[in-house]
Image (cartoon, rainbow, N blue to C red):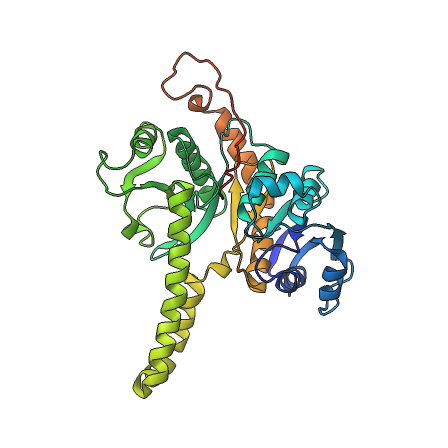
Length: 363
């Protein structure tokens, strides 16, 4: 049964990306074409992918295989890998997108390599200085967004300001929030707290027309205090992985206690449905992945340890982002904002030069 009614899309999926590729990736792709009205191009080593594909029932012609002879390992230097492995699965996926043979890309592979290949080959949207990964965060009051969670570990105040802009547009387009509340992740709520970068970003956001509520602390990450959480990629990535690990371990702690306590087992049976709902809401697999916002194209980056269900949901997200034309909305709003026509502090009207990101060698 079709779950989502969107215009049919063609999505390139990195068949070799992720800790459990290609088996889990192929399984997730098969689930996606069964559930959604779209096509998938699996990119990677042809024989391996076809062998895995033969294990699944797939609607005729909905999945094709595009050969790529090389694989970027999870621990490789991103820039070196992209330079030396021109025929890697992630690089070929991005090339297909650049040639407009697909509408979007999904990869669970090396994040740094995906960011490097995307930035260098697709380029950035007009006015954007650095891309940022945006992810959905389950909170006590619905879904919030966090940006950036790994693409840019050394941002400027202007980069953080642009993340707020892109997050605001994404929240309105995808999450249907009328006027998203935006918070800046910091070590304290006071304006005087934080690094030089966060202090300057605070000033830019305060002077903007965003619904900026000020600094928020780590304790508010899941309270729903704001709809868009702005942070640098270094802090954002640590917070994201810390919370994923915490959730996974809490589940194991609960299982351990239940196995040792009969009364607790009885209680868990009575509230089983509630526990399952909590687990579903907090599970990163439901989101599938995060979009690399700011690119001249749609690229969804999934967790390296993604399951088939996570890959399936990442494909769904890719189709949604294309359908709602998030990038088009970003370009429209940027052209209407004088802040992106001048450097911060420069009010002479001189156009600023948008320089493409230089991928971090250490990522």
